[in-house]
Amino acid sequence: MVPVRISLKGIKLGLLEADAIQVEPAAAGLVEELASVAGRLAGRLTVEAVAAMESIGAVRSMFRAWGLDPSKYRPSSEALLRRVAQGKGITPISNVVDIVNLAQIETGWPMGGYDLGRIHPPVTLRLGGADERYEGIGRRMWHLGERPVLADETGPFGSPISDSTRTMVSALSRELLVVIYAPLAAADGALERTLSRLEQRLGQWAAGQNIRRNISPPAAGESV
Image (cartoon, rainbow, N blue to C red; front, side, top):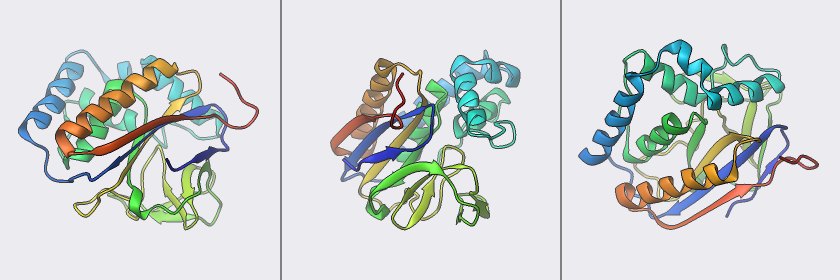
């Protein structure tokens, strides 16, 4: 697996790689599962209740420890859950993206799905530099100074807030990397269960093969 070094405090990463994925519009069964989970959550969540969720609170604390205001720079999982609470649902995009989004609303942890074939190791999770930026998915240029980023030899490509177009999953993608940005206190067992569900769904709905998963060690000198 591609090693990922963590230089930020208070976080650990769940990592999954898959080969031979087929990226296409989600099958009816996956769309129904996504709508069902979102519907159940919408029936009991308000926007205020999303902010009060234990997992969301832990992610927000993680952001604040990095000097970020999570109300201004929302974790991707919280942004999705707010949509659900507002009755907007989750718009299907592709089978792979839908699988990752489904896991985000189930857990409250931010996640990113990346085209592994476009990543040039080594990879580090760190704060972005003042002059670093990338073209974000669904938005214009994303300025990265003092924001958490995943970076390879080419530069930043991902974030628990908004990812880049450089490594976005497309119909041409064949190798996949999924990153779960979990608070350090998250139980390894919960991370393993989430990785297992991702593995099962990617095999069922995206023809993923040779799936590998791992939990990346936290920053040097830091323990749970």
